[in-house]
Image: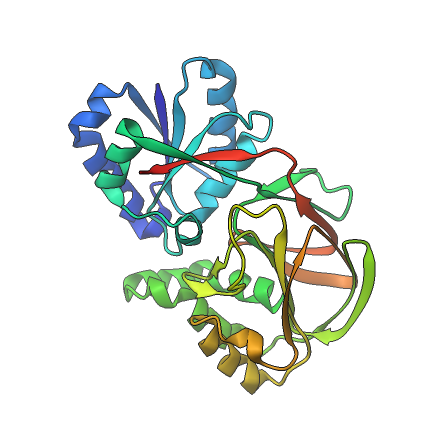
Length: 310
């Protein structure tokens, strides 16, 4: 049995259109597929958890058709079922996990290969806990978690009015760059106390700190160029205090991974990160925005298996 979780809103409706094409394919009918549509934020996690509990013995793979946010929900829904394989058919606006996974095929062709000749790939998701006693407790991320300007930009990009005109003008590839220009005007640097692998660091008036599982971010930017999805460690990017005009120049270089050569920008490997701030700071997790005072980040000890095309 293959369970397909579809977010019909992902990619401004692209996801549902793609699923309808998959549904008409002969392999869909032959492979005992059953589909569920998400209806609200967090629904993907509930679907995944219920499916794993009810059909685990018959479940060959859980296929996600949507964006990185949908995949984030499904991975969290399966946090107690790490042996259930996942496949990702990207249909969102960013699709950075697909880039990190080096998917060679797309759409219907990718679906066919997943059900006929899949190849398993193992990676270790990130684990985080915000504010220590957060109501959701320990959560997972597949792409990145970022603090400071990173979180402020994502919050701007996710505003309903902003997303509305981006959709009407068909400018989804420019979502992050346009949100950056808008967010940077009112953004204030942050003071952070950090522990990287247990070693204390203080950042004064920092621009942002981003922890990643793979290089890609914001729809194709190489935020941590040296990161690899299969690694058992994170890569962390730290941007110290720099003028706002220089931030714009820096992000033009991010698409090429050349920003790490700029003074005040560092990339390094770490196994654990602790963030402490005296005031609420903006944060993003796999493209979802929030705020926090503290956050603890580490790698999961359990591998997550992903099916990808051969």
